[in-house]
Amino acid sequence: MIQTCSRCVFNSNVPGISFDSEGICTYCKIHDQLVVEYPAGEEGWKKLEQIAQKIKENGKNKKYDCVVGVSGGCDSSYTVYIAKKLGLRPLAVHFDNTWNSTFAVENIHNLLKKMDVDLYTYVIDNEEFNDISRAFINAAVPEIDAPTDVALATVLYMAAEEHGIKYILNGHSFRTEGMGPPGWFYFDGKYVDNVHKKFGERPMKTYPNLWLSKWLKWITIKQIKTIRPLWYIDHNKEETKEFLKNEFGWKWYGGHHMENKFTYFCHNFWLPKKFNIDLRYVELSAFIRAGQITREDALEKLQTPPPISDDLISEVKKRLKFTDEKFEEILKRHNKYPKDYGTYHPTFKRLRPFFWLLYKANLVPKTFYIKYTK
Image (cartoon, rainbow, N blue to C red):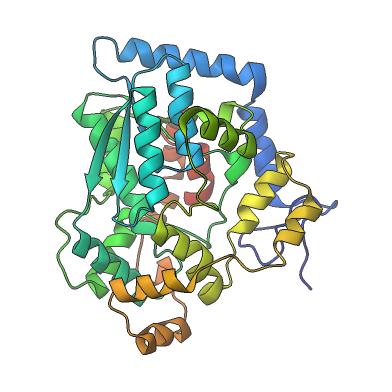
């Protein structure tokens, strides 16, 4: 019998879940712990101002004092605005995986022009990224979009090191995005490399992979910290979208992560079709906990499948050179997972006490410590 959380919409099919005597799930309790540790409202804004003051002091006499990852999406766009509101001098950083929607490109351009923010863009070779994406689909794993997440993290650190910047601002909000369950989506540099070695056909020359040694150098020796400003504010998604639209001509692209076509394909087709994973459960559960949607409305939304267009499915198959027959064969293939190819996860678990110290020093986010070291 499937049990559903009495507070959110997570159920017993979610990896790593358990329920207390009142039927409240593990992830709701993690959310509540984060709310206590990262309060919003007036207290959260004061904390943000204190952090911003440290960033300004560290970045004194430099052209930029922080980097901000941008995708054209709602959260990253709003993070740029928050940075400027705090009086910071951000450098916007974008990893172009060559699958951007028109909305994403226009949103980035309009926002940064009006905010007078410079843009650092890393563009990967188109055929090389196609080869990496093809490899992940052939590997039959959930995380076909993991190479994008890994590369964006790497490019943020690269930009920070190049400009002598000690702070990265990340647009994640646990209040509106939640925390993806381990087992639904995982990524690290070793995983990307192992999958590509097994299924890739071209050398990775322009792909910016995040090797553990390089990452540890950046966060321990270089002391580059990642700050998540939206963790400290009451971030109402619908109000934020309206604000960005009115102030910057920002355009809504129709759904979570739909600003990037390959990410959209991964979330709305690949995961639900092949793995029966619907990431809307994560976002809608976060909205429920944040009081931005009712549990009843969330359950109603989940009655319909995630939207996906046949044109996009055809575009992915054509661009990645999959015949209809080959693609169907992969969809029917036995599902594989990160552990089948090898990752840094065993190392992260062994170094759990070390990462606890890094989390306490604000060098890795608490969600990384919770998700990746257990």
